[in-house]
Length: 342
Image 1 (spheres, rainbow, N blue to C red):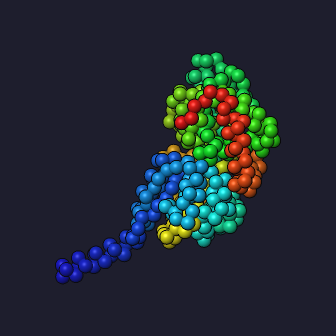
Image 2: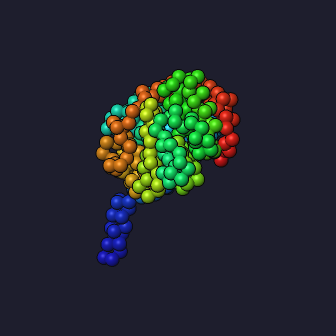
Image 3: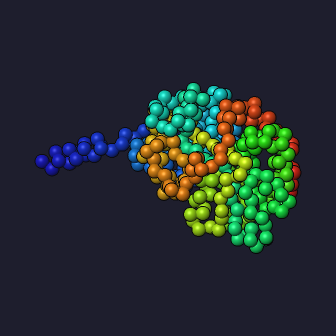
């Protein structure tokens, strides 16, 4: 009797547990480290699939996928700005997962259509800048409100931004200013801002964190990362530039040639679900999720309240455009001031 009961209980437990996969799923994550870690943990709990997660900026991931084409070391790329995901799709570095996106917001579906199903939108992030109110007051600096303000000599050595070669955030800034002002005027402005930059970081969220800690006065990046800093009590204010600003369509893509397509598809389904996206609030993720059922925070950036440009993802997500803009940035902007690199 006891043996039968124990066997029955074991059978019930086995039926209730998520099915485990024989091999780990390798994911490269371009979100914040805490969000990467939480997603890996939750996905394992809910599906039984082990995830080996590593964090890299979008430019680093694109370079890795190019280097590993035909022999990929990762199965899925989750997070990061949409432009490099589009480039990866166009270069055959990623493949369609076949996941149904009909329940996602329109901009997420547009990303899927734009890439023939190879990239799916997971969030929107609005570009802006942040300043430390205490340092601004101590130094008697004017309050910045516009992109052109950042070129003022008052801010010499006071600004931090990421390097667009490694950071999708910084590439979004570069592409945004080109679309706002025209290419020649944008590079003139970028060089003037560059004269005020004290450091080019590898990560796009690093400048905002530096401003919050008082290591720089102004940081350029995505506003949702800055909301987290403000909610944590740092003396900062967030600015949506007066001329208008660009935005990212964060995405998830399956790497072409993955031997773990079933688990990869399951991961894409999970990170685009309300269940998968909502826990981001637990670790201060305040971007705009692609699943309308996901929970959001009232202090998160609102697309309707910010002057946004009509960001041309097809043009600025092409390999040719990206390489040309980055080459010109290296030539005309990088050496404009005395900035160091992380």
